[in-house]
Amino acid sequence: MNIPTLPTNAPFSEEQRAWLNGYLASFLPSILSSAASGGATIAEEAVSSSGGGQAVTVAFGSQTGNSEGLAKKLVKKLTASGHSPSLVDMADLSVEGLKEITNLFIITSTYGDGEAPDNAEDFHSTLLASEEKLENVNYSVLALGDSEYPDFCQCGIEIDAKLTELGATRVSPRIDCDVEFDDEFIAWSELLIAQLAQVS
Ligand SMILES: Cc1cc2nc3c(=O)[nH]c(=O)nc-3n(C[C@H](O)[C@H](O)[C@H](O)COP(=O)(O)O)c2cc1C
Image (cartoon, rainbow, N blue to C red; front, side):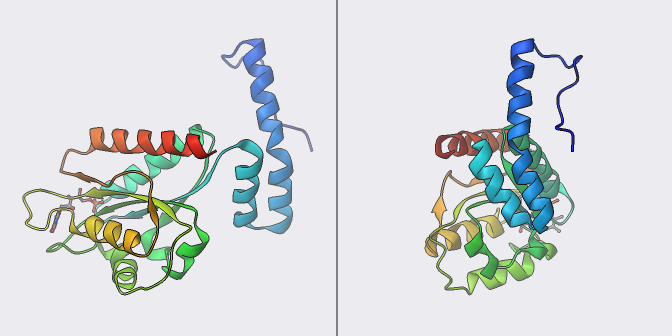
């Protein structure tokens, strides 16, 4: 197999190109071992140990796409920062499975009268009833909502409070976003990336 390198016309100096090529090559053993085993978990661990980046789960609860769109943006930012994010629809996130996650970043809206969006309903209700110990989980929540509603950002607030109750560590404060959320998303995501850099 050829080791991938940056093209010679990439906009980098010789020194930058040499560094980046070395960095890319350092991922090769983990990519090969992951391909051989077919396991995403092994790939995440390998990236975490070889590149200094962290395996991160970005989960979204979204009715009309706002949270999902922000989650995809966060995944791009994390990847650009050298981390290994997985994008997860909250419909596919189990409370039992949280024990296997080290870094969990949740973006969720609130719907109905202070309820979870449809895709997060099962996770939300199971989590709130859970007594699972989650001491190994580092997490943060970005809550989307609309302050015109009496239960502003209720779903995100409840998930955040319950994760702390179950022993998970809140690595940066929850931010409750109103209908304009771009600035809050930038602030929240930059803080998370700075926190990850400290523990990498
Ligand atoms: C029918 C409806 C009900 C809503 N209920 C609430 C609510 O109870 N509390 C709240 O903070 N926001 C509420 N919202 C606002 C949404 O949470 C907000 O628009 C959010 O950005 C949607 O994100 P999403 O597209 O990811 O679901 C509601 C919006 C609609 C359309």
